[in-house]
Every structure is written in C-alpha cells, then in structure tokens.
Amino acid sequence: MKLSNQTAIVTGASRGIGKAIALTLAREGCNIAGVARSAASADSVAGEIRALGVKFSGYGVDIASSSAVNECVEQVQKEFGGIDLLVNNAGITRDTLLLRMSDADWATVLQTNLTGAFNWTRAVTRPMMKARKGKIINVGSVIGLHGNAGQANYAAAKAGLVGFSKSVAKELAARNITCNVICPGFIQTDMTATLAEELKQKLLEQIPLKRLGAADDVAALTLFLSGSGADYITGQVFTVDGGLFI
Ligand SMILES: NC(=O)c1ccc[n+]([C@@H]2O[C@H](COP(=O)([O-])OP(=O)(O)OC[C@H]3O[C@@H](n4cnc5c(N)ncnc54)[C@H](OP(=O)(O)O)[C@@H]3O)[C@@H](O)[C@H]2O)c1
Image 1 (cartoon, rainbow, N blue to C red):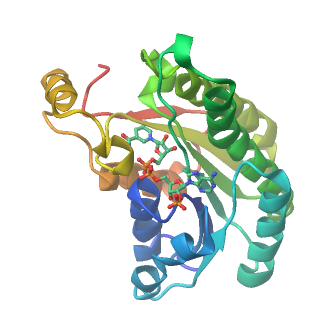
Image 2: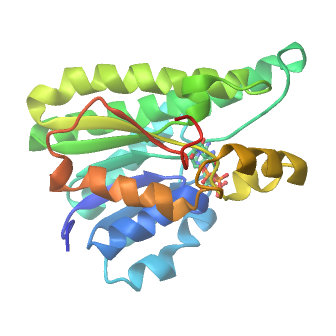
C-alpha cells in the first residue's frame, strides 16, 4: 500500500471527483477526513471508505469560512494525529453571461473555489511545516487555463488557483511541502450532468479520446501526486482532459 498510515483531507468528498479521490487514496491505506457542506453529506461515503479498512471522519464545513476551516483542521489533527495530504477539490459553478452575472454569482464562486483553497492551505501549513513534509493538490480546471463564455467567475477562480499554487510551491518547498494543480476537462459528475445533450455531442467531437472523463481518471493522477513517486514535483499544472486542449 502506497499511503499506509497517512491522513488526507479531501474537500468535496461526498460526490463526483472528490468521492473518487477519497476512495482511491483509501484503497492505498490512506485515512480520510472527508469534507462536504453538511456532516450528513460528508458522512454519506463513510461506509464505503471504512470498508476499505481505513479511518474515516466526515466534516460539514463551508470551505468559504476561514474560522470553520481552522476549527476543522484542529479537529482533524486531534482525531488523526497529523495531516499528510490536502486535496482542495470542492468547487461550484454559477454560470451565466457577463452582462447577467450578479455580484453574488461572482463572489460566491470566488469565495468557494479560490478563497476556499486558500483557507485550507493556510490552515494546514503550520502542521505540515512542523512535520517537515506535506503534499497539497488543488483541483483547478481547463477553463481556468483557456477561459469559457458564460464562466468568467469560474475561470477567474480556477486561474487564480494556478498562481496561488505556484506561489505556495515556492514558499513551502524548503519545508518539503509540495503543491500542484490538476486541471480536469469535462468529467461525468453532477456538475456536468446538466449540460445539454447537444453541447455534450459537440464536446465529444472535440475530445480526441472521444469520451467525457470519469472521476477515476482524475483520482488516478491525484494518487500519483500524493505518493513518493511525486516527491520531486512541485508547482506544476497537469491537465486531464482526453486531449481536448492539445
Ligand atoms: N466535473 C467536471 O467536469 C469538472 C471539470 C473541471 C474541474 N472540476 C472541478 O473538480 C472539482 C469537483 O467537481 P465535481 O464535478 O466532482 O463537483 P460536484 O459533483 O458538484 O461535487 C461538489 C463537491 O463539493 C462540495 N462543496 C461545494 N461547495 C462547498 C462548500 N462551500 N463547502 C464545502 N463543500 C462544498 C459538495 O458538497 P455537498 O455534497 O455537501 O454539496 C460536493 O462534495 C471542483 O473543484 C470542480 O470545479 C470539475
């Protein structure tokens, strides 16, 4: 097992990509602190993860609230004894054209997708610095690298995550803490379930590998970046998009 006795905080672990990441890490012996908006939602994966023989606790935390995040990190340290990995995966969309984008559409997406990652990363920095090791993986998006009409808020947050992660990588490297970004393309989850069938067909025509991604495709790279094989990789941005943006 590649991650025996390690502990990962995975945000957005209740569904989609985060759930796949939590299960994939757990299969390698990693204990999981799973975060979602409510404790009930976070706990919905408890049975599946504990069945793999690892420790699991679910936490209901609004990642946009720094005080709630700080409290949760303290609790995780008490319950698990340390934090080896942080996967900032939770994210939302509030898609609309710029002219119609409300202050709330903009603020909520920035506060969740960018400030949320900042809140967790800052909170785990002290314990990771003390341990002189740690791995932080941020889930961005190809939209943050290339932009998309109707997603100015989302693209800005995900692009911000790249600059944030590169800065964190430089700042924490001396303490043996790495920070990388995974940018998925179009992955089959609740987030993309609402895409119109016509748009999905158009997308499929543009994706060289001729399918939407699976959450497990993103989880596989997360596992690699979490393991010792990635000890010398930091500040990098990896795309998992079936070749969409070759
Ligand atoms: N799906 C794609 O095609 C795609 C492509 C590129 C990037 N991404 C990124 O990948 C990540 C996961 O996406 P997904 O498709 O798996 O999303 P999803 O199925 O919609 O799941 C979102 C997860 O985030 C949690 N969450 C949302 N807001 C939160 C908040 N304020 N506080 C705590 N937890 C919160 C949700 O918790 P609840 O269950 O409690 O609501 C849920 O677990 C996101 O960052 C997304 O931007 C996705």
